Image 1 (spheres, rainbow, N blue to C red):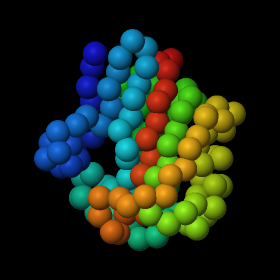
Image 2: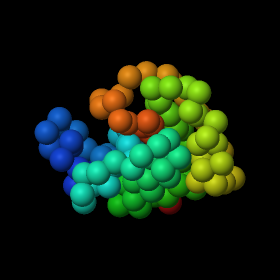
Image 3: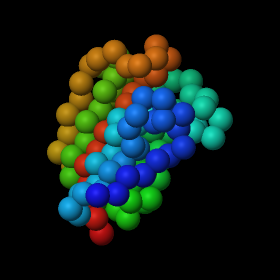
Image 4: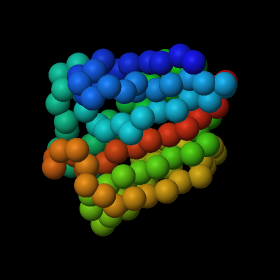
Length: 124
């Protein structure tokens, strides 16, 4: 088993890894749109969705996988009515991979967070 970090202060403070590689599978933790270098979060659902997808892509790359290898995705949003604004970005991110997906309306860790994305992928 191999663990990877994004450098987010949340990982150390809470005690988790951004992703874990185990038996050919990559499990990426719930990932928001934070810029981990500056620990800033863009405003709005669309900007946060794009940034979260970029963070997920980076986590997958670090573990030797990629967006095209995602088989399962879970979206968590505090307001389900904002989800349709994300659809164009999600279609573009997954392409033909078209992973199995679930959207959950729930509270997130901080009120300014608009989306969190968790994925499971295979290695290349």
